[in-house]
Length: 118
Image 1 (cartoon, rainbow, N blue to C red):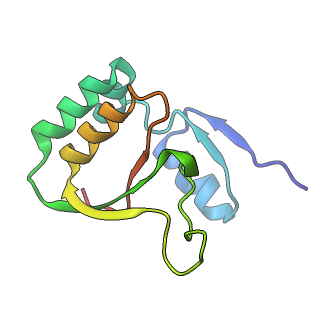
Image 2 (spheres, rainbow, N blue to C red):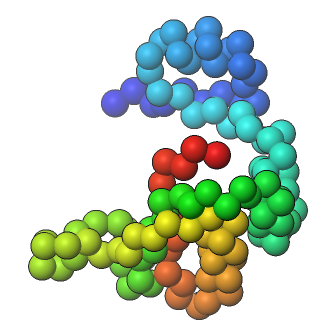
């Protein structure tokens, strides 16, 4: 098995020229480290939630939540006739606030936003 190449702090031109052109996977460490949301997230969960709240226009996004016992694995339920998660449509800031609150739980549910155009 060929190891996946890692690039530390690549720039846009390198990604286009080397990664996209090769059509092979690569680990791009630090690619978005200067993005404002990432900078806020590195400060604290509260800072990134506040950053998102200020920019949220209220448009609902597709969100899912799993109970703690499935440990974030989004899948079918035990009977294989449904799913082990709940779907919801919420503004991105509401999902982020929910995830932050759950971070204080000893066994939190998992929360995810799926394919949101933001």
